[in-house]
Structures are given as structure tokens and as C-alpha cells.
Amino acid sequence: MLVMIYLFGMGRLESFSLPIYLHIGTLFAALVYFRREFLALAKALPSYRFRYSGGVNNLMSFLLFSTLLSGFIGYFIFKLAEKSLLTLGEYFTGMIGVALIITGLLQKYSRKHEKREIGEVKFFDTILLGVAQGFSAFPGISRSGVTISTLLFREFKSESAIKLSFLMSVPAVLIAELGLGITEGFVSVGIMELTLGCLSSFLIGLLSIHLLVKATKKIKFWGFCILIGVLALLPTFSYMLT
Image (cartoon, rainbow, N blue to C red):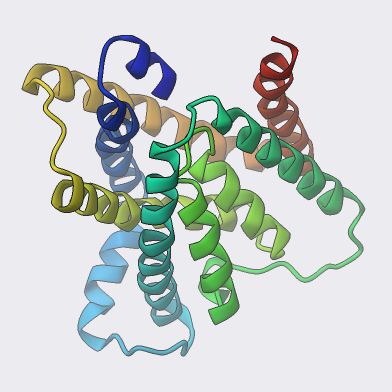
């Protein structure tokens, strides 16, 4: 998406920041699909304490601190990306592909039986996922890909990893939009173009989340990780051969 925007005549800043604004659609897709989880978080907000004390409080601390860390790291990654070639993202996409393949193999051959649920996030998970999500600000890195693979590596169940990844996306996108608007200025795009872009990303995002969640119930997720990892490597190989 990033390269296409750049090729269709937008400036350097717009080509980097517009995809983030288009994630408004995927933000609403996550809100709609996981509405029960977000309602539970909203109801628990008055009794929230800044600590990891189990259940919903754990999840709220995880989302809060991982988002702040992602925003801090993501801003510097974004500024670095502005000064780099767009094609550098292909190498990072390849790295994510390798990480997904390794994650799939670890899942297949691991003898550990401990599988973690969504409410079992710990402080170290927060740091690790905050850093991982922050690096997804670099062009070519899939935010969901890097966060899901990291969560799987931390021995979360497949469904819990997917759910946590998309729950993380909502505050992350909000922070990214507000941060870019304040520090860089809002992208000058027509209302109609932005509306159509957000609508299409909402519909595609909703369908993608649904298919991904359903797929984890019917197939071995280690095989899915390896398949997506191989597909992620293809653009890197293509770029290296050109």
C-alpha cells in the first residue's frame, strides 16, 4: 500500500503517514469484532489499579503500558523510515517471515504443554510486545504479524494471541493518529477518498479478523505460521533478484 501511495503522486510524508490514517477502518473493525472484550474493559475502568493483579486488570495494564512504549519507539522508527528508502521495508518483511517460520517450527516441535490465556499477560510480555509493535511503524512490517508471532513465542494460545494482537491495535492506532497529527500535521486528503479508504479497510479488516479466528479453530496454527512466513519472504527474494 505504501509504495502504491507514493507512486500515485503523494509526497514523502503523506506516503508514510496516510496508511496509518487508513487504519481507522481496521480500528473500528477490531472494536466491532471484539466489542464484548472492550465493553468489559470499559466497565472495569473505574476499579483499575496500575499493577498486574490478574484478569481484566492485567489486560488493561498490558494495553496501557505496551501502547505507550510502542508510541515512543514507533515515533523514532517513523522518523528513521522517512529518511530511508521505501524498499528497505522489504528486508524487514523478510525478517518477519523468518520469525513466523521459526515460530511455527517451535510450536510444532515444542514439548511444553503450558499454554497461556489472554488474562495471563505479565510485565515482561508488556515490554516485549510494546517494543515489537513499535518496530512495526517501519514500512513493510506487519503489525499483526510481528505481534502475533511474538505472543506465540511467549506460549500464548493461538486464539489468545490473535485476540491480544487486535486488542493492542485499537489504542496503538489512536496514539499513532494523534501523534502524527500533532507532530507532523494532518495529511491533506479529500473527505471522499479518506472515507472510501477507511470503509474498505473496515470491511476487509472485519473479514480478515473473522477468517483468522475461524482458521485457528480448524487448522494447526504452526502450519499457518509457516505458510504466512513463506509468503512474507517472497517480496524480499523478488527485491533481491531485481
